[in-house]
Image (cartoon, rainbow, N blue to C red; front, side, top):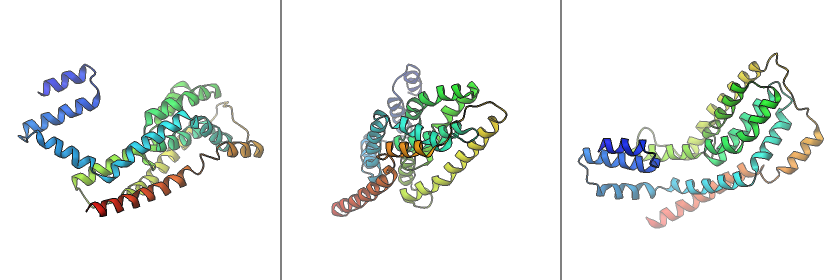
Length: 245
């Protein structure tokens, strides 16, 4: 059966089918009844934190379709473009926040990378550095809330009952410092790479800053709104869980 799993993976079968087939093989060799798979799926789906996954997926789709990436690039360019290596900092900050809300680094690379890579090349950055910068920046926001991988990690660890129990909010707080550290280190490296090169910088003007802040007036409250919605949904979920019990 393991050979069958390897074959369907090589043939390009969707990943979820390959993972399901591998799980079935594991259950088979462990002599666990396959009917237990349905029970296990129901137990996992009944987890309260999983309700956040479809909601954040929809939010990411809306952000990608509403051209938020263009406005994020513009506001970060205005406030960070004057620095040495400023456009690289723009890439880090924009991709980190966009990935945090969409939950997928691939979406960030497509939506934001398509804008930043030509701009980096036009500003005079080396091609290899620009490609590495765009692809790396997409994964920075995975440590920032609300991040789908963090939610999935929390669900899996809680289901396995490993280590000290924790809440999703504590997991989000724990990811802030590593994310800031990664962005800081990459920023320092970008400034070091840009030293001695005739790179194009964007001048800062208060008029343009006011203009771009007005343009992103609907996106700026999103972190606060997301936190409020998360608290509301958690309270509602606790009420439903109590009534269910």
